[in-house]
Image (cartoon, rainbow, N blue to C red; front, top):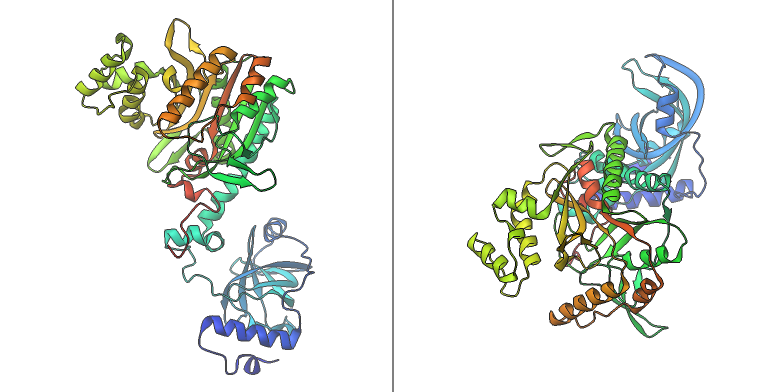
Length: 498
């Protein structure tokens, strides 16, 4: 097969040309998608091994590499092939490359995956290069690559065709490599801190552990309606009751049938943990140590940039009770109020629209969300949440309207939520019944009381600190990603026909 016969009478349509080349290749070489090909090193390993090789120097070392063709120059004489670790230049010339290998060049398109065996050299310009001795077609790509090598310009297309986004966008590729390192770093940190990782069910017959609308499914064999997990909390607490471990954690996928935004995806990742004989202040210390270690892992220091903001994960973080934070920003002193009506009136007087049945705690939390959250740029633990909105946390001694709960904020986002966990079985049941009644009043008829969890709590759960961290948001922050969909490999999206 020569260049003229290989390319004669090919269509002008790029996709059709590739299909015709595939047909010709099958006729000429047989298997275009071979099952067996073994490289001797990755491109990164090659670059490292020959880092000291001087320009205009050729070795006698024979290596075998493989990768996707990203550029081709001078009719294939020079090609750049990329594997997951980086790129290498391939040189094919009549003086160095046998004719049977060179006849394959006209059939190679950008996007094809090839294997190359050859001699390592460095060009006069300093480019590490392999003088090809043999070229093997490993995968013929039937679709053209995107025209812009810096990545897909259409944001939605990037999410829909993530394989092309990563293939052509180094920033996206690096971000998902960093995501893997961060998740591994969380797991390593927790294990080094003495926590045991467990796996809890993703299919629940009773959903709970958080307030959210669940995704529903059906188990055919059991003839049972079920729900995708909205949180692993109640199962992890049952693990604590069992005595299997005093420190338990899970890196888990949760599903909430709610809105999509730059910070919300229906399917998301959390790290949730429970620590017996600890409280929410111990957990604050743990969060600070974890965040600092992850920043060091990604950036080599505790300071980094998000957008135009300089963020520091160096502890200790600011710690401020929610009522104090609201008073600082708005001047409203909710702790001076004794009734729900006083709280509603004070909020309305300050220009907030509150519902007629809102409680003292709901008013406090609403004003906090509206006015204080936007001010929380550097990491801070906001403590002492209203009991009205915190059914699983212990009361603050001397202030029964507040509980030992904190949320960690940074860049105005909530990154983590933690409690001194309620383990009084009678109070826990009363709060969950009240929460259930409120859900039914809102029309959530599928919401049920989790009697199996309450039975476990009756058996006795040790005092504990609990924590949930939104892993996706944390990764957004550490990798300077503008949207949660930039850090989720295959985010939820509408069907293409929509």
